[in-house]
Length: 159
Image (tube, rainbow, N blue to C red; front, side, top):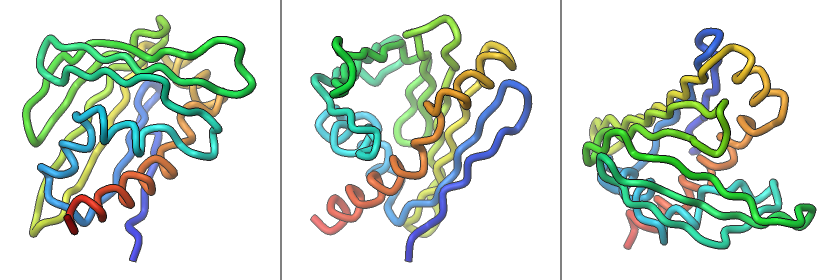
């Protein structure tokens, strides 16, 4: 049985995504922090983008840089930022610095009975920044991303 993903605008500047995964918090945390695992689920397949590179130094003060290719784009697209906090296996906070309108993102992993409640909280700098992100479709991939993460976790937990 699949667990639902909920995407909810909580305020003018906040978007919150929640989902429970049938895996321990450590496994979910590792899927968010190990580049070889991130590449297997982060990019929604329906978006038609593929990873060119994935660097993630997930520690307080570390940085990340994800570079993607899309068939319709002449140049690769880079997403990058800094990790403001990394507390294994319960919490990661990072910046999204590819534009001035990028949110500060916080993801928490709360385990109960071998299952993990994941809450992803994006705080945008303004109402207009969140409105623009929603209008562009960039916030619309969470459900598919988390389906892909669920599939990855099923293989990791079985191993």
